[in-house]
Length: 136
Image (tube, rainbow, N blue to C red; front, side):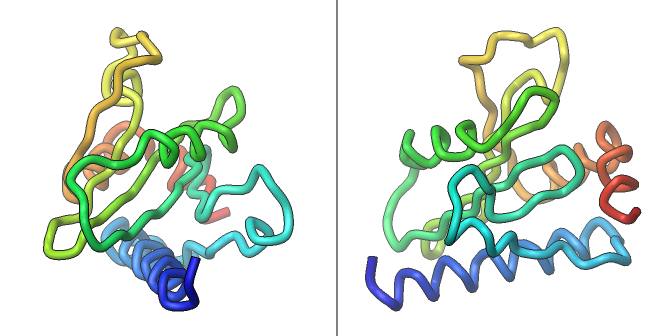
């Protein structure tokens, strides 16, 4: 990974952290987990029970399966994975389990990709507990 790619990744993580804080009306900043660079099993960001991986790439349409595997690898029982990804000149997208939208959709092989507004709406309406946990 080149220095420019690493910088682009760090910048995207910071942008998402700030965007989460602003768009969800959080008082406490969402901080990058810097241990991710020294130790394994840490996401880029954490918001309550949500483990968030951020990926920004120049070209593409669908996220790499390795990206989803990466966030699954750091998500323990009782936590939720979220892959936030963006390709140049395309909007931010978020991949989560379908069951995080509706518990009746319990098949772990099924995922949904949301736009930013839908993801933040979901967090406010169904996961307000996680927003409260973050503010503690």
